[in-house]
Image (cartoon, rainbow, N blue to C red; front, side, top):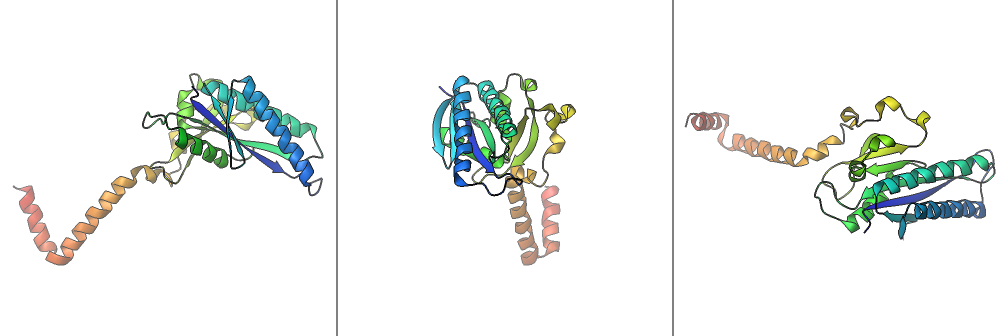
Length: 230
């Protein structure tokens, strides 16, 4: 039974020094990347699961297989682009998620399928994102050039989603900052985790405001003193 999903979104980028690329060249680059993804995923025991909204989804038994396959795909995609100076640039945005929700401990096939597509869309062209569940499932995360990168907001989720980016070139990442950095959390997104507390606090504040308008602050203060000394 598969435990992890990978989604691949192919991005075709015209070369500025070649002019406008035609549909045939775009199609050729897309087909090469599609075959590349299929070949490498098969080599790492990945099984094609779906083709959703222009994205390829593969299932893997182990997160290490999924991560290594995706890194290999990004490396070979870079090599293809370096060898071709006429065709458009083909880059792949990749997301990897666990089928088991790390917060509930439940296997959520349909949610995971939607989430992995979301992660691939959130990753930029040529980037590889792991969900928190996938990252926590890595037995040896230090073997990957991987670090926390940012939090993502997704409709229907009750908390922000931590995304971890995987690098395959040491020159692209500060090797001294590969560990999870709590200070890197986006403070503007973090309050989503405490939304419930803020809602309760707002209701209580509104309640006391109405009391002050109806019975006056003196009566309210007298009631509070009486409550404390009861």
